[in-house]
Image 1 (tube, rainbow, N blue to C red):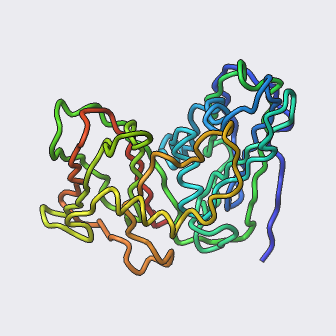
Image 2 (cartoon, rainbow, N blue to C red):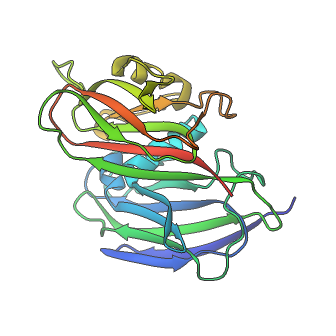
Image 3 (cartoon, helix red, strand yellow):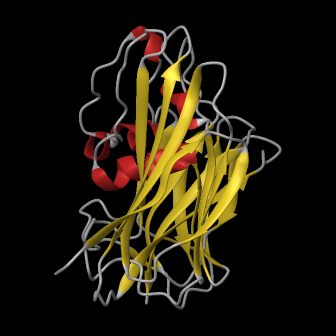
Length: 298
């Protein structure tokens, strides 16, 4: 099996803009997006670096394939690859060069000819990066973007990753969020505003259940503390940190995982379903970032 790695963006200077480009026509395994800059006085935190990238959107003929904020893409990387993305130079030194790389994935595993984006006519597949110029905590920002193609691959499915921002429900207790139907559900990713830090046990969401055609499937009552604990299966080592670097991401995320073995054995087939919902028991009346990771048949 051949692969072809190409460069799509080379040393693009940081700016506040939405930049759209056509992606190659060959089947694509994944993209690699790198953000580089220099510390301003002290160490820039991971959250501050992530703030340079607002959203990533990949669409084919106007149909969304991936649409995530940078924090949710970081969480997806952690979920898929069972390790946190690369962040270099955890040093509180002025002008120390920093680099954060994020994978933009189109399959659960890289270089999988059976699970990637299929070949696409020229101009039909597009990537849009919504960017903000680096400033205050990190400067001299540049971005680079590479693409890994799999010429000749004939995939049967690809990964779809989308974000839904849920408004504050108006109170605490259980509220329902509609989930997409028709594909194979791998996981839900909950990114909460409220997450315990000091002298508090409060979470934005206390518990989750999933209902297909009004019947509970997989998760009938999952406590968020235990969902967070299951992060051990996805995050790997916490890595090396210093106090100035702040809390490592994802520090506010829990996964509702239907694919714990990464082979589809327990994934939820939603084809033919009339409804699919997440029952979310809110502990705090606040907004929630709910990402859905699915496999789509080609």
